[in-house]
Length: 301
Image (cartoon, rainbow, N blue to C red):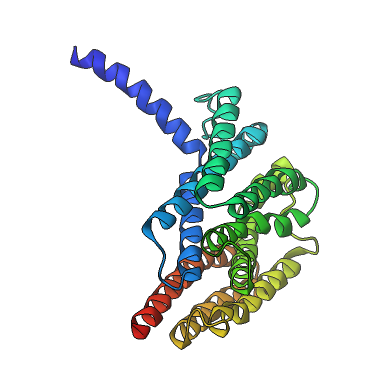
């Protein structure tokens, strides 16, 4: 009897796991974090728990839907690239129509949730993010390096979702956080695209700029260098103070150093260094924002 129950349970768990995998939980989770931090900074540390939960949940549901739909759209490409062949659609664990229905339900549900709980502006930004991701970035991937520049826009829009959920508008603070998110993604994607260049070439993805290794390295350096002064803008606008600005400069300098190494020699090791530095940089920067926002709130109390 127990064995029969286990045999029934395992397929169910496997099925649920496949649907969970479709949502790219790592990326979805981090998008939820960025929206939540943006809302927290916009509130100057006075973010209500209900608003925080609605912002994080709504953003997560819509993002999960958009990423599921991306796997539906790119299901044939995913069967060719080595790193994606184990995904639910290439392996047949989920059918294309099931993925389409699941993703559509999540995206639509997330948009309705955000509109009702947070307002029209956050919902409109969420919809724009989905349209930009599927209507511009995805089709451009096989046509032009512009895809990388365009794809960073929907990647940074969750910062505006969180900010507008609190303020009901988009002001200089919102644009500052958006700019940080945008320029952070460029070296992140370039590093990953270099590491996966053979897979990307196999399916015709053009996420690396023309001009060879030096052009790639120069764009890594340029985007990480621009990040440093842009990262100071929350302090200039009064949302953070000197401790944040100093910390942002230190970690920005470390990030920039990895980009210069890649410029001197574009290799798998150095590209991986840029990529992993990007994985550390942005979470650390968000932590510094939270820390200094709380510090200013407590000092004013």
